[in-house]
Image (cartoon, rainbow, N blue to C red; front, side):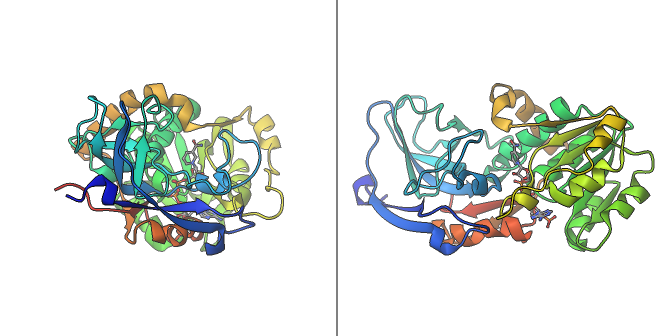
Length: 348
Ligand SMILES: NC(=O)c1ccc[n+]([C@@H]2O[C@H](COP(=O)([O-])OP(=O)(O)OC[C@H]3O[C@@H](n4cnc5c(N)ncnc54)[C@H](OP(=O)(O)O)[C@@H]3O)[C@@H](O)[C@H]2O)c1
């Protein structure tokens, strides 16, 4: 094995704040020597990175649920890493972990930084490393707590989810089916719509790129929408608002249709539908539920094992230098399933 001191860490840093869709000029590439951890610390080799729509928000200046990535800073990213040097008895060499490793090939987590990095070992008996970035990871936890805590679905109710074939959407729909709901997805293109219905068991899926979402909702949600899990915002949110039933719950998870806007965010016009229907809209930030992740992981791992939950990951090769190109796939809809960037091959 190459000695630590001979290793080089290739990194992707935020060079400037993008306007609209991120471009290659928004990033800079650096190479630094890799250093040994100090007492209590560990060194990780990044195996895979989670590419998330939220990254677009982290690139902006301004107040949010988390500080923006600073200009010149290594881009923030969650990922799976392998411990390759350890001065912490809790993390033996070879342990696979999930952590906020950043877009770089090696990550040093010093003593006392475990919580800040969200560091925890992953159990590959429960799911593959890719599944730990999907159903058992941040998107799966978002789906679980957004649906169960905020959406509060009851058996027999109609749940609509946008971004249905994506990381969060695929799990929301399957979980709602497991809980006895009727599930209607909204996704872009026939392949994604067919997949969520045929493979995941959704009751229907509306292809928003093919035409009229309103007409699709009318056809597939004849008794109204009880829970809408919103991943996209914009015009689709308005269309669903026009179709909600009495006491509906709308989970504001994300608004990807708005993330690259250069004009102000398009807010819901049909919000008075909340009044008429005694309904509510509520936002969710997954990190608020961190102390309950183990419970949700256990439940979801059970569904993976018994076959009631499927997971689809879209793994891109190319390492950190492919990051900029990979990220834009989320905004063009080219990803099919949870978008992951492979950085190195795992053990075995
Ligand atoms: N609140 C939280 O804590 C939290 C945590 C995780 C994720 N999120 C949010 O959840 C949403 C989904 O995230 P994800 O990681 O699961 O991503 P994803 O769904 O795997 O990928 C993004 C998908 O968004 C769709 N999309 C892109 N532009 C669109 C547009 N203009 N209109 C409609 N759909 C569009 C595309 O699918 P199509 O091909 O179907 O268009 C694309 O594949 C995002 O809004 C994200 O910010 C929130």
